[in-house]
Image (cartoon, rainbow, N blue to C red):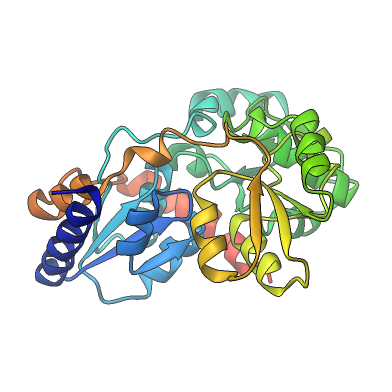
Length: 307
């Protein structure tokens, strides 16, 4: 059996099991193409969790990383949440712990903690309000100017937001290993090779890389921009998995990764075999203790209330 036949067979088996379990499959756009194709919904992490919460599915299969499955469990406590690859983590999310954050809050009493959704449930529970890469600017703008801000954990996203809002913030020393690999030299080299291409960059990249962008946004925002733009060529500064949706949704356009190193091993750890196994065994389940869930939910709901 060749690779295409195996993918086809696994896809059919997953569809059958999904119906039996009344399950909904979510896939982040950084996932493998075949995993994205088997999903009912694909997109950014928090938006996936929100849409899943609004369905009548009994089971959520989250093809992503641990903090994303936790967010789904926070928003859907009545559903079983499965993470096909239990060890799919996020190095950036691991760069801040609840204990470390509590210590920083003691140093800065009265500061508002803004937590990027790329954080654990325990850290969200210690935060005042969450944000995504798409709404981080709006969230920070909603905070009274006399309030100091602790922005966690991504210093690159925090720097982008500080530049956009003019707000001085205490930035946590965290970063995305994958996005932080991109250098200005690589973007400029790509621009030399493709002079007519627009540069689309995720704000988790370094400030000096973001400064070279024609457009900066979340993954969903980058896809939308590419679809709506009259341009035909784009240099992409975010994880390689997005290329599948870009080519699928933007026929006739060309896309070039800023660097071939834009591959997240955690996002690529989920396979169709593991999705099938999760549906068969109903494991690994991701749960959040009720006391932590309640506090983490409050920080997410505060964010969702900002229009």
